[in-house]
Image 1 (cartoon, one colour):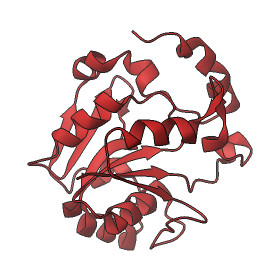
Image 2 (cartoon, helix red, strand yellow):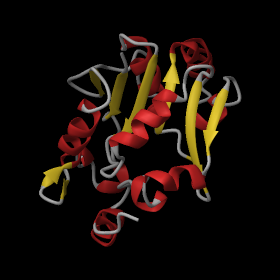
Image 3 (tube, one colour):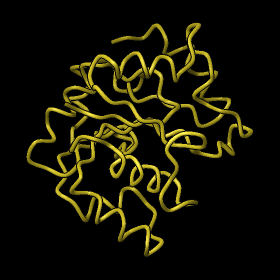
Amino acid sequence: MRSAAILAGGRATRFGGRDKGALLVDGRTIRDRQMAMLSEVVDEVLIVGPGHIEDLVPGCGPMGGVHAAVCAARHDAVFVIACDMPYVPAPFTAHLLDLAGDVDAVVPRTERGLHPLCAVYTRACREPLARRLAAGSLQMKQLLDDVRVRVIEAEDIEVFGDRHRLLANVNTPADYAGLEALHGHKR
């Protein structure tokens, strides 16, 4: 029994305030793609954002969303994904969840650094998240100093596909335009 949460509460200021989960990628919205993928792996999918699960501590960005997800989830391990990541595959998601048994968080890392918004967090993260939120320390990467973390390196990510495609996200209109080049690049 596993949970997942799509973080959909961002303001998308670099994308003109548009709902990035509603963007079309290969004829389907990113949110539809994520819901289909997640339904293969988990039995509970939460959407954290306006009109869904609200942050318990508003105005705290992704950390507030992760906190809300971990607090609302029925299961111990929660796969958390940003709403603008269209290409994360189900086998990779299942692998991250499988690795969460003896740690508090499982986070991929590439040459671009850690990817804390495509990661697994367990209930053990609730208190460290609450402390960081109360202190106004909102950097997700700093949270990882407070918990037991298993880092998944680039070569282990590559088993599931090209890491650049797999972890691609849409922060700007240029990123969205660039998805076309990644779409057919599965390996």
